[in-house]
Image (cartoon, rainbow, N blue to C red; front, top):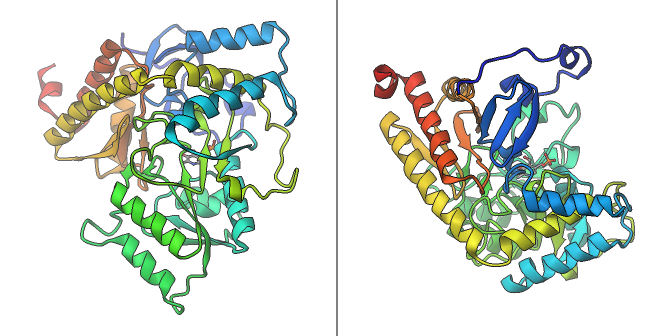
Length: 428
Ligand SMILES: Cc1ncc(COP(=O)(O)O)c(C=O)c1O
């Protein structure tokens, strides 16, 4: 069914701040959601290729996660408990240790920060500074780490940075993998700068990096580059932080985005799909030796979202207890690569990203925007990414059924043809 644009209540324009953004791209009032489908108030269905920017990797209202949460609420389980011990937190910690950490041979302490990704990044940066006694953080071109001041300093995007209204100190910017083209090894450049006492680089407390840059254009770093960057960080006495907020929880195929690359981060940040159901929850993992916080030194009222602990525990049990989900995601990722590769090939564009975090670089923000708007007219929710918003970015729920997956990609293909004058649009 073709979705029609219906009016939304004037209360949004009258009362809500104009800072809102996604509602401008998708000007509908949504009421319900299930799996990979959102429904607006008129009952029109939309396939969701945005998935809360990778917050809904397991889809909307997964029945098992929903049942676990409803049972917990019905039994008067603790909703808010600051950072006190609760049954729900205990179950989450035990499950995370048993299902995620132990099988991967990982030894980390878990810090529950305030519930957004930016909070987890703030904690990571502060901890790295405290551990090393240094202030400078190395962040990368096109990196996105959140919009609170500390995280924003590490974020590259000028549109977000200009909102700070103040200086954003304490971060040195280095070039991400491939930033200057395939022939320039940006890791070697960074190593040289850090080794030169006159380069102007201060000795860093940490490097913070995304393995696939989610907001910055789906740039996927090679495992070799990441290994090199980790080694350079260590050589220069800096901690190695992987920001896995968008690329983690299965988005690139495995629970952590860097699995099987031989990386051993000092600190890992997680949020978004961690709770499994879109409930706010964030985590900063650190090597036990780095866990040198004083009690309450980094705190926050909402560090104990017990409802999120319940759904996160259910999600980890359901999707990560064995290899079935990972295999299913790999199959969907191959299908996505084939379909997007064909579209990109037809129009002379390039494919970006890795796993189920993929997109097409159209080379133009206006073109990518027009394609996304054409998709929305046909009932597909999809957004852009990149420094110029030039990438059409597919972030479907990892649980999407094959028929809906294929149908959504058909809409995307037709939108490319419609906007770029392909044969399909002409034929229909
Ligand atoms: C890699 C990465 N880090 C941090 C953040 C910030 O998370 P939040 O928006 O929950 O503060 C994001 C959000 O998109 C992200 O993609």
